Length: 86
Image (cartoon, rainbow, N blue to C red; front, side, top):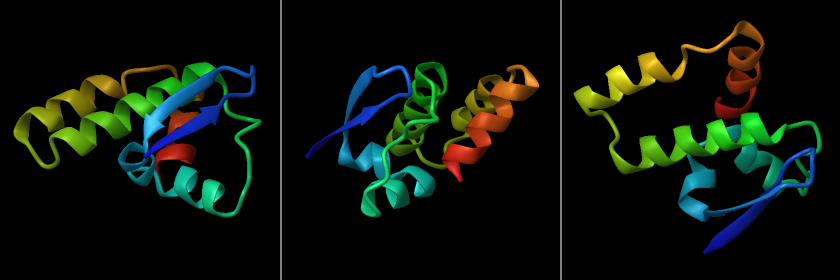
């Protein structure tokens, strides 16, 4: 099943339901019927990238290295990411 997530700029991201389930925060927001009006396209695309990667290869050694590289972003971006993938 595909789910469409809309960023604060109105950009639509169509993703598989399994991808959404990787982020408890996004999943709960969808279940409660809340839109994602405060989530920028930049952050939403990064969260989707993270969720896809973790859904494809959970608990692999390569994933640890990928995670370390993924979080090499500025502090504001890292904070926004943390809010959505918990």
